[in-house]
Every structure is written in structure tokens, then in C-alpha cells.
Length: 415
Image 1: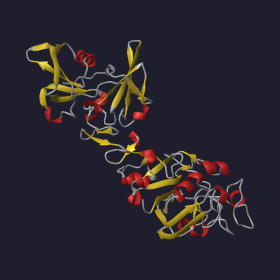
Image 2: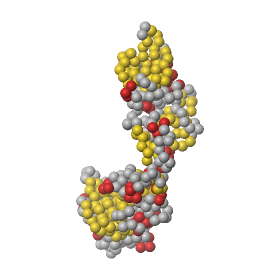
Image 3: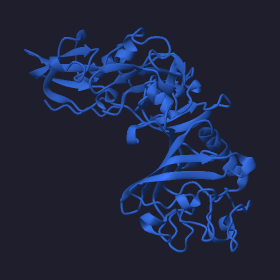
Image 4: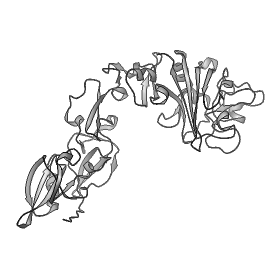
């Protein structure tokens, strides 16, 4: 049986809100699977004169996710149309051979990346149908009210069991094995077991890790009872619990900034950024913290350096750096910068008698050394090919090689 349907149809969806900014495109049914049918979840069966009629029945039927279309013995003008509220993934045990049928599922259900869809207002006898690779649970911040759209998620335990998770928990569906997990973490604003500590009360990423947050991502912490800080937590590297305060990836952010910009911080925690010298002081003033520096060159070589002691003073002391206790594989290119004040292109605090390092010899804000300015500078110009102005770690690739990636991260020794 070779039936090719080219008419585009949009699946009817139900709800009150929508996931914002999904990809927009027309939606049809997936390719037919010949000689197969889905049993055990038939909502309704009727006789039709063509497969397009069967498709229209499925579109009009609330909850229809797929259909079987088959021949009727002794009647060449009529066909069987069986509508199902399941699909071949959720009902795989009932997806069996039958040479008299073909099976076809809705595109959103059939596409591996699609987990929800929005249904929009009708114009010129057509509807908007927006497929999304997220849903109202994993992307709750973008689940907003829109009177012109209806929302529907692909079947999951989260959709069908509203009492699955307790107060302050979020339901996270797993579409691969049709299960769900209750989590707290930053998405709900709570952490710990059973989700009783608000993340804004966490002192550090290490605190969050000990309270059960195991996924890397952007969280809100408060190290000293002041204004909460939004930080990027690395929960995977070297035991996890690291608060990342500097990140270079692709050169998308300019690090040759002035004093105030380095004081306040800049960039985006999901990309390149500097967390801010005021925040860096707060994160190191109340705890005995250690530093880890992860580095990568453009040839794919990866290395790291760790320091058992790391501290940055406040602005009154020009954010003076103290560090020591090197271990690692990158080589110790940072200890010589200890006891130096922070400098930027508009604030010369280095001890060099020859240069204003941040303006004349190097670029970017840093704890420049005396008298040569740098043994390392991870805030230098990105991917430069000459001079000592790049993203530098001397003992890894030398003073004239600008590195591809750097991450500077800290965590308390005991918390």
C-alpha cells in the first residue's frame, strides 16, 4: 500500500498558554509505516473513503496522536480509520505487524526533538502550529499567557499527574524512557531535601551541591547576606561545586574594559563574562577558598592549574590578589602575580616602572606583575597573533600564544 499525503495539517492543541519563541513552521503527519498498526489505544473507529479523510478525523479528535488506515475486505471503496490517543513510542508493545494497515503519527509526536507545540489563531483557513524542543516544565520561565495560542505537551508523567511532585519541587520529564523525576534546584527556587532551602540563601555553588543540586547551570547565591548574586556553577569538574567567575570561549565579549565595568562585572554567564571584582571580593572574603583554572589551546590541548589559597580584597585596597599552593599540569604562571593590585586601562595600579601594563603593554583588567607585567593574563585580547597582548598562560603555551578557552573558578575548602 503506497499512500503519499502532501496536504499540510496542523495538530489541534489544548491549553491556555504557550512556550515563547519556538521554531515556526508548517506541521504535517509523519511518513506512513506500511504493514504495521497500533492496537490497545483505539479511541474511535470509522469507515472513510480516503486517507485524507482519516487524517482530518484525527485532527478534529481531541487527544488523537496517530491513526491506523486499512482496507476493508470485499469493499474497494471504503477503508478503516482507527484513531489512537497513543503513538508507536509510548505504545511500542502494541505496535505490531498487519499487512492490511498502514500507521501514521503526528509530526510532533514522531520528531525526536519535539516535546510540545503551540496552536495559533486561524487565518485564510490555516492555523499556526509551532513545534518546540522544550516544554512548560523544563522551560517554565518562557511559559507565558497568550490569548491567541493554545499549548499542548507530548504525553509525559508530568502532564498527566499533577500531584507527582511535592511543594517547591518541579517535574522534569524524560521523554526517552517515558519517566519523570522530581527536582528542586534553581528552577523552583529551592534546593536540599525535600526542597526546603531557598537557593538565594545558599552561600556558594558548593553549598548547593551539598544540598542536592547536581546539574551545572546558572543559580542565585548569597555568600554574605548582602545582595544575591547570579552565578554559573560547575557541578561536574573535579568534584563539582565550583563558582565560575571568569570565562573565555570565542571572543564574543570585549575584555578591554574600564575600572567600573570590571568592578561591576560584564558579559553573560552562559557565554563569556567577568563576574565583577566586588562580587569576587564577597565570594573570597568570608571563606577560605581555592582556585581552579581550566585552559585549552586551539589545537585541543586541555590543562589546568589549582591554587590552595585565593583571596581578593575590596576596592579600598584596589582588589589586591593573594594566592598560593600551586598544583596541576599547566605550570605555575600565576603565583608571581600575588600581592599585586588590580589594574585597568583607566586605573594604573601595577608596580612596573616602565609601563602602564593595562594600557600600554597588555590589554584587559588584571593583577599585573613587576617588572614584565605578565606571566599570565586571561583577560587579554582574544586570538591575537602577535605580541604579548593575548589570553596568556606562559608555562602552558608561552607569552606569544593566545589561548582558545579559559575558566577561572573557586570553591570553599570547607562548607
